Every structure is written in C-alpha cells, then in structure tokens.
Length: 207
Image (cartoon, rainbow, N blue to C red):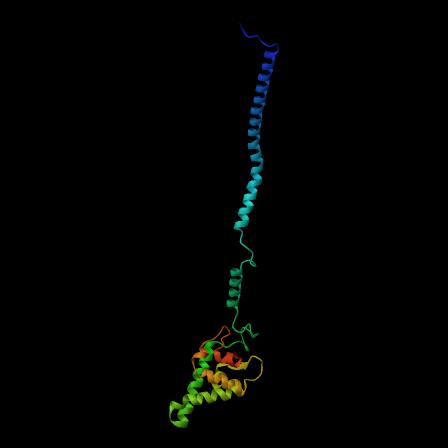
C-alpha cells in the first residue's frame, strides 16, 4: 500500500527548494559583486598609496638640514677657518703695514741678526763662541725698547703686543729666552705665532 501524501507537502517542498536556490544564487551574486568591486577599490586606492609610497621614499632619501647634521656643520666651519688669512682673528689686515709678517721675512731678519752678532763677537773677543750671547743681548734690548732688531728693521718687520703697548723688558726677556731654545718658535699657529710670541702675547707684523 503506497504511502499517502500529505496535502500541500509537495507545494511546501517546492517553495523550500526555490528559496534555497534563490538564496544560493543571491549568495553567489553577492560574492561575484564583491569580487568585482575589490579590483575597482584597489585601483581607486592605488594612486593614493603610490603617492604615499613615493612621498615616504622622498622623505627617506632627502638630505637632512644642516642643523641636524653636525658633521656637515663642522666641515663648513673647518673650511671657513682654513680660508681665513693669518691675523684675521686678531683684527689685523691681510696685507700691507700691520699685517702678519711672512716666514721668509722672519728668516731673513734672523740671518741678518745672527751674522751681525758673529761680526760683533769676533771684533770684541776674536772668538765666535760668544755669538749667541751677543745675539741674545741685542735681541732682548732692541725688542724691549723698539720692538725691532737690526735684521727686523732691514726686513721691514717688528714685534708688537696684542694690547697695543710696547713689548717692555719683562715680556722681551720671556720672548728672548724661549726664542733661544730654537724649537718652540717653530711651533706656530695659524696666525704664524710661535710659542715665544704666544707666551709673551706678541705678534710679528710688517712695518
């Protein structure tokens, strides 16, 4: 005996099947729509993201300002210092009278004073052993009184105090004592001042 169908059951199963198909189709359509919109959204966001990436790259590769780069600042200061002429930081002119005397002029003045001291020592004692003593006395007295020696006068240079006053006997003694040691006067700074000039606060300038 065949089972008896319940009235309306077939119609119910049909409606359920249609709803299932409808929901499945809607779901697939929704997924397809989302998949279609995703590339469009990516394309719309693409230029903005590209610009942001480029901006970030530019910020990373851009050189930092000078204030944030101490090495560059130190290099610029070193270059400016190297380009300054001797005597600039002392307020002296670059050329002409009052400018720092060059080393060739100083060497010429030293040679003249030494040769003159040799002649005087030989004339007084008939012995050149006293040359250094004559040189020391000449340099000390003439520097203290006039700021020049015979050799310096002929070379066109003189010794002055940075304060503007005369060298005087006290500072002339300090300067001459260090000068006789030979080596310290050769250790000059960028203003061509040896240790004897720095110790006595003096500088050799052109007349």
